[in-house]
Amino acid sequence: MPLRRADIFGVLTASGLLLLLALVLRGSGPDPAEADRLTRLQRLVTEAQLTDLALLTEARYTRHPTQADHFAPFQDHPLALDHFPSGMFWSPRRPAP
Amino acid sequence: MTGWCERQRNILDVALASLRRRRGKNLSLLVVYSLTVFLGASVMFYSAGLKREARLLLSAAPELVVQRLSAGRHDLIPVAYAEGIRTIRGVGTVAPRLWGYYYDAVYGANYTVQVPTLPPPAGEIVIGPGIARLRKVAAGDLLPFLSYRREDLLLQVREILPAESELVSTDLLLLAEADFRALFSFPSGVATDLTVTVRNPQEVATVARKIVERFPDTRPILREEMQATYAAVFDWRGGLLLVLFGVVLLAFIIFAWDKAAGLSAEERREIGILKGIGWETGDILTLKFWEGTSISLTAFLLGTLLAYVHVFLLQAPLLAATLKGWAVLYPDFRLVSRIDAFQLTVLFVLTVIPYTVATLVPSWRAATIDPDSVMRD
Image (tube, rainbow over all chains, first blue to last red; front, side):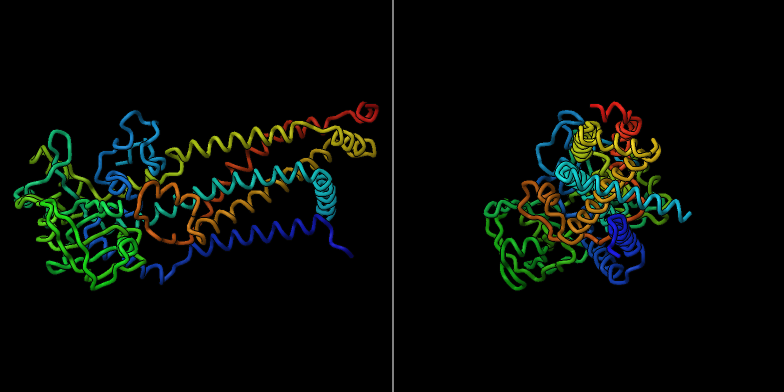
C-alpha cells in the first residue's frame, strides 16, 4: 500500500518536533566539560578583575558598557540610531537595579 | 476515536493535495514564513546565549567597583580613597585597578590594557588571542608600543591567553604596573578605579551607599548591576532588534493576510464542489485549519532548526556582522548550544498565532460559501 500524503507529513512533522525536543533536553542536562570551561574562565575574570565581555570593541562604551554611563549610546534621544553599528543591540531601558 | 483520527487523516490528505495544486503560491508563503521564524529564532537564541555567558562569567567579576567622577565625567581616583573606604564597617579588601585603552594606529585596533592581580614581570605581557591573531605574534615575540611620551616600549609576549577565553579576553593586554604607568605616563598615587570586597554579600548595597556618603564624588558599580547591564543590552525585546523583528513580523502578517484572504476562483470552485458533494461547513473549516497548520508548523520547524544551525553551529555569521560593527578585533567564540521550552513557546506564539489569526476570517468566509452561486459563476 503506497504511503499517503498525510502519513508522510505526519512522520516529517513528528521527526522535526522530536528533534526540537531532543535539542531542548540536550541543553538542560549537566555538562562537566562546560562546567570546567566556566571555572577556568571565571578564574581568569577574577584574576584580571574583568567587568565586561570583550565582545564589542569598537567604542569605549560598547567595550565596557558596565563602566560607562547608561545613556552613552542615547545622546540624542532614547530611540535615536546609535553612531556605532553594534549600538543597535542597546536597549534604551535602564537596567534593573 | 479511530474514526475521528481516520477522518482527520482524510481531510489532511485533501488539504495537502489542495496545497500542492497551488504550489507556487504556497511555496513562496512557506519561504517567507520560514525566514521570519528563522530571523526571530536566531535573534532569540543568540541574545539568550550571550546573556547567559555574561551572567555566568561576570559572577566572578569584582563585587564592587568604585569610580570617581569629576564634573560628571569618569576621572582617575586617588589611591588614598582606598584607606577611607577600608574603614567602612563590612568592607573586606580595597584594591586599586589600573586599566585603559591603547589605540594601535597601524592596525586601527583598540586594546584593553589592564594590570591583573597577579601581573607578569615588568617588560613582559600576556595578550588575548585576538591581538595575537591580528599582530601575528607567538609567545616569546616582542611587541612594540608607542608610549604617551612618544617613546618606544618593547614588551615581550610571555603568554597568549587560551582560545576558549576569547569572549572575555580577545583584546586584552595584561602587563605589570610599572609598564602600564610608563606606557600611559600614568601619574602615581591614582588608579582608574577601586575594587572593593564586602565581607557579607547581603551588605554590598549598604556599603556602596556608605561609600557615596563618605565620598560624594564617587560612583559605585555593583556586580549585580554589571550583570543587569548585559541582561538589558542583550534583551531581544529591546533595542533596534525588536523594531526590526516587529517590522518583519508585520510585513509577514500583511503578506499572509493577502495570500490567505484573496480566495482565488479556483479555490472558490473547489470549495463549492466540496460542499456540493456533501461536505459541511465544519468539514471545510477543518480543511482550512489543516492547510494553515501544515504551512505554519512546517515553517516553524524549518525556521527554528535553521536558526539553531545558524547560531550554534555556524557561529551566527548574519548577526555577528552587526555585532562586530567597525571593530577590528572581534572574538572568535562559539556559544553553548542551549535552547529551552520557554523560548520555543514564545517563538511559537509570536509567529504561528499571528498567521492563524490572519487566516481565521478568510477560512470562515470560505467555509460559508454558497455552492450554488459558486458553481453558477
